[in-house]
Amino acid sequence: MFQPLIHFVRAQYRTTGFVPLHPRVFGGNEKAYVQDTLDSTFVSSVGAYVDRFEADMAAYTGAPRAVATVNGTAALHMALMLVGVQRGDLVLTQPLTFVATCNAIAYCGAEPVFLDVDRHTLGLSPSAVAARLGGPAGRDGEGRWRGSATGRVVRACLPMHTFGLPADLDGLVAVCARWGIALVEDAAESLGSLYHGRHTGTFGGVGALSFNGNKILTTGGGGMLLTDEALGARAKHLTTTAKLPHPYEYVHDEVGYNYRLPNLNAALGCAQLEQLERFVEAKRALVQAYGPALTGAGLQLVTEPAGTRANYWLVAVLCDDRPHRDALLAATNAQGV
Image (cartoon, rainbow, N blue to C red):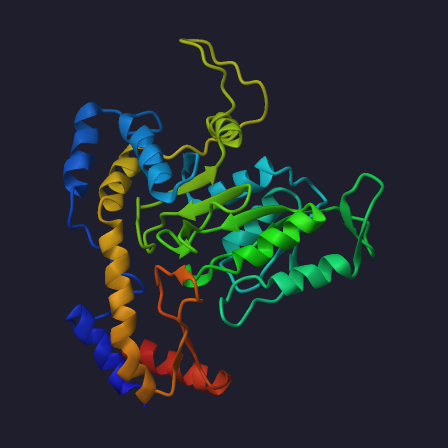
């Protein structure tokens, strides 16, 4: 049943060996830029490529400010801190995500509240958020929303753009604005994805990107905050150990975090970003080619929501039921896909 699909995947990668989740492509200036970094000796968190990567990413996404971090989880942690998430707070999010989303909430001492996703986006459902805020929660005397059972502040809403499919951002922005909840976008998987022509990660107060080795663009390990100038400056300070500028003294005015992306990784990112549109277009073409192989396996392709451009980082399919899903996973993994 699944052999046509397995043959199709192998044909794409032209191999009879193991096919990993997301093989890397290094076909641009990666070696030249990394060698330039080695020649400069500035391989750590201070260097020209870190500044360039931030500027290039801000220009690509349309964000006022981009701040590079050591990984996507660090970006998420910092994003939640920037919007004021504190110990004991509640953060509305989705269970269909990677664990980093919830880990970042836990780093703040807050607790995730898991709400449903929409079928057509696989992202957090605005109607589920509205039901939660309009149901077992209420506004206190200071205008903050609290869970009625616990009295804890509902501080933020953290959707994730699943597999690069943009969530319903119009709905999420509206419901968060109505109840005064900070919107933070986990855009770790959606670099290159657009919602009505605007890049994901730029609709909330802060967005977080990831450049892990399996993402559509990689720096080996790395992440990025997308935000406004004021929060960007705050993020830069906190992620650089909260050190005050000085030629030789080490004065730190608050608890800081050693979260800056090394120059060596940023050099790789600059080269990858130059090729990003080609990566996205290749992904989008691949999705179209999957059609016949999926039909034969009884699988339904998950396609981009209307009005969006998905990067199709990973191709998602729906199975008929759990036994169908388990059979698919068993068959593909047994044959090294």
